[in-house]
Image (tube, rainbow, N blue to C red):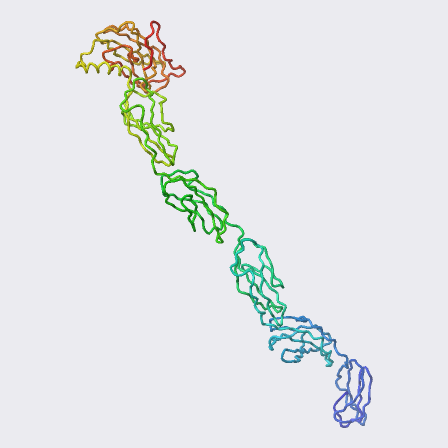
Length: 602
């Protein structure tokens, strides 16, 4: 229908309809004027002019354009949320495709409670909040063009809103607090969760807070390293709702603690201290230790690797084992031996030299004593302690019960004792003995005067005899590193030295009175009463530079029987320099002529 306003004096109307043609319509017609025309689809422009009886036109109206459209637009395609979507978010944005000929869109939504058509929407999406709670929603969209042709609704898509978590599973295996000591393959099991809207449910197993496996089953097995584990299971439905179990704990411990290493006291220790501190190395994963002392017992030790024990005397084998929290152990360490002994060995008894002995036959006496015994800490060692007139002790450590000095001892009075030590450090000390070393002349002098004393003779009235002396003793440098050594020996006794009482005159270093550094052989006939000889070495070389104490000695071997053997020497302190490139003087040999007799050493 084309409709325009009525003109009262219009005889006719001229209708210009492009592109159809020009039409005359009788006037003035009804008000308004309606002209019905059948037109095909298309775009038309039209205008009208009124013609009065005088054939005068009113003029053409403004041109209007209209469209004939009987074709419905295409139906849109649904995009989001995808068909069958499960969500726990009630805020949903619905999206569909754009239809080129559509002027608007209508959304048909069916909720668990009602159905409604929403629109029109000029965009291809709309955000809605689903207010009717959990359940299944359906939705579809139709497009409307400008001519109000409708496409009809698309296929229906479903959407499930589920804001309710599934039921929480219950942990079954392993039970809380389980300790696995025989296997590390752990089977986990829990009850199934139920979800009416968004099943099936998936499960996530977490160990120590870390998701480890996601699976659809309610059981699984894992091989795990030693350790303590906390485990949980979370159940998640298709909408993303989650329910989580409580936490259970289990322990995997296949390895007992290692065997400790013993530290102290070392193997084969001897001690005289009954308080013994046992020490061993720590063992990984050990909760406690067992200290086993044979013949004493076992001691449980917790929190440390040392234990102090007071032990009676005896021989003990000790060892340690480590035990974990589950009473597992790899056993004891190899045993170490300990001897506790606070009893001294038996006291040695001195045998030789006897107490009070005078020795003239040797300057290297043999010391002897009885053996000490010790039941626990043998064998026994000994220390020989000998003291001369200086009061300074000389000690020798020995394992035997005899000792002979390797050097000559000076003529002196000595005290001696023996200490016996066992391996635990216990000591026993013998009685102290005294002995005297004398030269033969000193001994003979004693033999001579002792009977005289018995006969009430005065020491000032001895039997007439020679009396040898050293009247002069000098060492003079020659300036070339050699020295002139001069000794004057004489006889101040009332009797001449009888021939053939040949004897020696010697010079000694007082540090060694057994080996002379100069030795002259002399004839007795050279020493009448009041007579004597000057004996010299013109170019003597000392082996070393330094200070020396020299002793000139007439008749050191006690050949001549004299009135007094105690005045046969003279000492001289000198400082000498050894000549560079000059060989030390050899000990002189006997001079030509009759050989001195006897030839025994002092």
